Length: 423
Image (cartoon, rainbow, N blue to C red; front, top):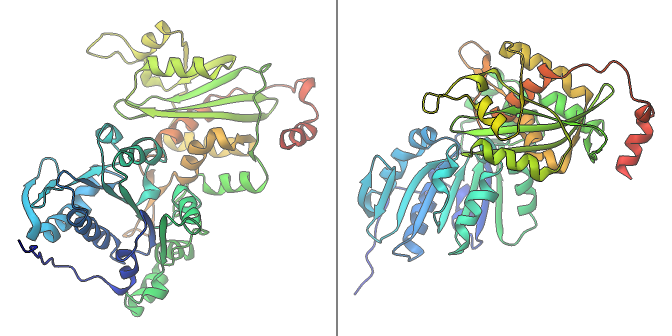
């Protein structure tokens, strides 16, 4: 029986041909805006769903948000897979191909929808906008059973997990990597690029069109402050001192992530020793986490809505937490702008433990406002994405910290203490 040939409506651009011809299991592409990376990787996904030869194959395209996946990729997926399509589910955003494989679209904002499934291949679009834990905790394990493949694509947003993986991929034979700059691909009209450059800041153009990871994240709220913390050596080794109580500051999610900062105050210095974030878990889970950390705790601080009673139980989460041994103080109810201002003022006083706080540090660095092209200014409300929960918990920390009147004699010589940390 002769093999059936299917013709799709896709002609790859020259810059993507090395990607399509790769033999590695993993790939990562940093590409400028309007390069066509979503179309290229979707077609690669469709092709591999067919050529992998697995009649029960399961493949996924994942965007930072479910609605984003639907708006950006769903029509493309249906269009290019049409010659191979057996059936389509609009409610699940899934396509069953005649070869037996299935392609489904997901959002990284709902990682629980991905837990427990297996994947033979996956495309992660705009990885820099996803919560850092989605890859190691959810997606990578889903590829393990059947040794599935993965492709990361995106546009730079500073030295984040996407940047770090690109650096590792340059030396890892299991990874294909490429950086596609507008000045090198020839895809966009030179006059259009010139016009865009005239209307954008230097940092915006460098990031969006020249794939610069060095440019500051456009619209970043705490980016400069965190950069100064790194440059001054305040991000690194910060030990836990059992003689100083640990205070925790929370953003309690309802149906999404809960973030917790763990800090110790020593004179006017704030030591940020730990960070934890999870989603889809009850307060009993977080009570267990506190216990497992083994710290000597002082205050636990949560936002004011923890005191709201739930209709189903008639109890507030404040009461539920108390029954689990967590007695919360309520953070001051300030405006978003006042809270952000307090957050910025707090960072210069802080030392961050890099290893334990890495997801939180990345969230603070990434937290940003979107640019309003019509008004040529940044929108007042920050973008709600994976970084928002850690940033909100940071606001509650900043507005709740009590000033310390005098330094403890034990910590008068701070400079010597800091040298000790680095030894």
